[in-house]
Amino acid sequence: MTAIAVQAQRLLGQRRPHRCFFESFIRTLIIVCAALAVVLSSVSICDGHWLLAEDRLFGLWHFCTTSNQTGPHCLRDLSQSHVPGLAVGMGLARSVSTLAVVAAIFGLELLMVSQVCEDLHSRRKWALGSVFLLISFVLSSGGLLSFVILLRNQVTLIGFTLMFWCQFTASFLFFLNAISGLHINSITHPWGQPRKF
Image 1 (cartoon, rainbow, N blue to C red):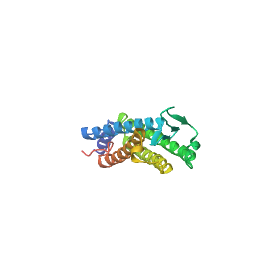
Image 2 (cartoon, rainbow, N blue to C red):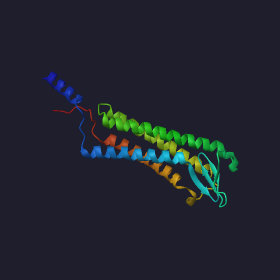
Image 3 (cartoon, rainbow, N blue to C red):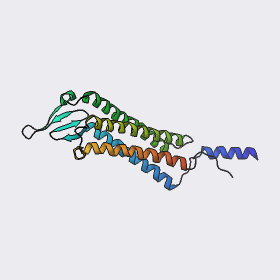
Image 4 (cartoon, one colour):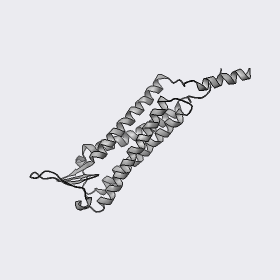
């Protein structure tokens, strides 16, 4: 009798785990929102123009001066902006922001793999993916904060460009998806746990 119960548990453990529709929907929504955050952050970093202060445009990669006669004139040498420590600080800000996108891509991949290839380790992959998203939030927030601190004398609320707000939104989505992913993993029933007869 015991041998039959053990064999039945093995068969159940090898089956594809079943989840309710609501749980699957929430997990899919988290993946879609995380993908959206990766896209927003990537576009924002590639463009890099985050702050317009009077006739100057500050970005992660360039410093531009604008005028009505000649149009924008952009320089890659950020030291010519005459803002102390901008060249070194901006290098740190863009490095941290780029690492945030890399971490988010790894996290997103783990989230998708955990849903496509469901096995006994899927919940662990999901949790690890959520942790990567949380790391992305910390890194992207660090990049944003570094940018604001470096240019604190030029910062105005209406001076931030659309690309800055895209990065801000992406950072918020990284946090929201990471916390939601960890929470839903903790409150749902383990997929591979053997059921009692």
